[in-house]
Length: 257
Image (cartoon, rainbow, N blue to C red; front, side, top):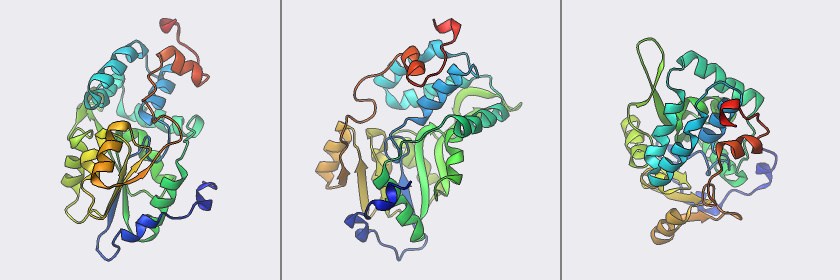
């Protein structure tokens, strides 16, 4: 995070009221706080290391996501059907300890840390599985991960479905409102899936490296915008599972050759 310490706090944070109590700031995760897509990255790692053998579903997952991104977020949970929840927790921690390299968006981290220092609760609201981001609580001043929860059966086995509110698109706002009844002063996101959540913010809304659809909305609404110097994640097309594994220097399982 050394790069972040050399970046000035944006002027727009002066408009974020700090006299309310309690105070809450919402941040999307992938594409907003970092360039990576944790849901994809962790799943590719699980496939490459043999922790799951569902790599053949990758094309259907990507097609589903392209057709309906909310459904795509839910579809990814099916890769883990049949895994004990305890094993998932152990595998995710190994992913963070052994493989994870977050490509942070420095200005977003500066904003998050500034708001946390001013007494804001920081919630990361994501369409990725909640469990995949829980280790973040030890890396940044984040109070809560609000994400896509795995449904778990009576024996502690993942069913491949989501539990509770589907935390994607309008579901992001619905889930936040089910957990918080006080003012929400700030929200940041990067994709159309974040729009409803971003509209919950009273004082400042910030579009970070926005996808084209969200950028149009941000311009119309007068939201703050931080443009990216490269195409936002996912706008340049998708890789095959073999290409994803190769890009990460992970082995390609025999069943995918």
